[in-house]
Image (cartoon, rainbow, N blue to C red):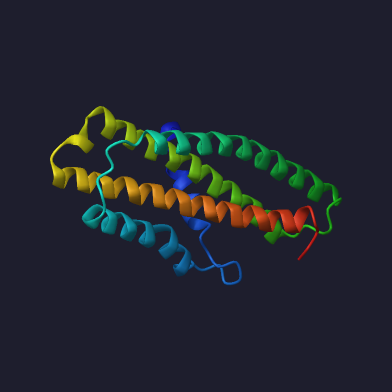
Length: 176
C-alpha cells in the first residue's frame, strides 16, 4: 500500500507492548489491550442493552484523538531535542532506555489517534446505515463491536497516561 499504509503504526504500538527488562512480548499487556476489550465487547453484545445512539461517544473519542495530535507534536519535538542533546553530550542523565520509553509513548499516542479515528468512523458508519435500529441480533453484534473498540481505546489511553507519568518522572523530576 506504500505511503497510504498505516500498518507501521500498529506494528510499532504492539511491538512496544514488551517487557522492558527482557525485551520479550508482555503477555499481560497484550491481554489487557486485546483480550479484555474483546471479552467486554462480547459480554456487552450478548447481555447488554443495544446502543441506539453513538453521538456522545463519537464526540468524546474525536476530542481525545484531536488532543492526542497535539501531544504527538510535543513528543516529536521532545524526541528531537533528546537526540540533539545526546549527540552534544549535554544529557548525561538520559539513558537509551529512557529514549526508548519516549519512542514507545509516541507509538502509543499514534496508535490511539489512529484507532480512535477508526472507531469513530465505524460508529458514524453504523449510524448512517441505521444498523443500530435494525433487527435485534445484528444490533447486538454491532453494539459489542463498538464496546470492544471503545474499551480498547480506553485501555490505550490508560497506557499512555502510565507512560507519560513515567516520562515526566524521568525528565522533569529526574527521578529514577
